[in-house]
Image 1 (tube, helix red, strand yellow):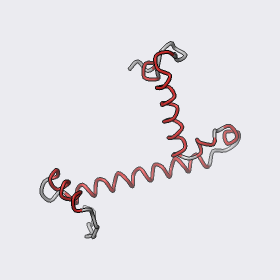
Image 2: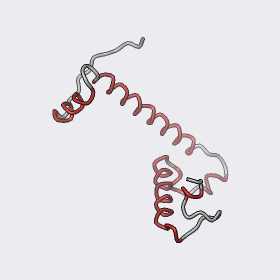
Image 3: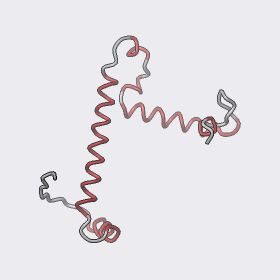
Length: 107
């Protein structure tokens, strides 16, 4: 078992009261541990993606759009592309005749 340490955090009273009402007795530490572990996992993943993108050799560097050079930029690019597809609606079709990315995937 991993060594546990006691810490002190300040939280808004109303938020803590609602969380306690939803969690039940003595579950705060489990929730905070779970949320913190997920945040650390995402931060590590983001750092790894940034490191890979920063170290791509050769012509890829010259051909990659600027927004793909960070994980945040790539995520924004995908989000914007999806919004663009959604705004096209039924009047515009993809290469396989589907009217949206979801339809193109058969969803």
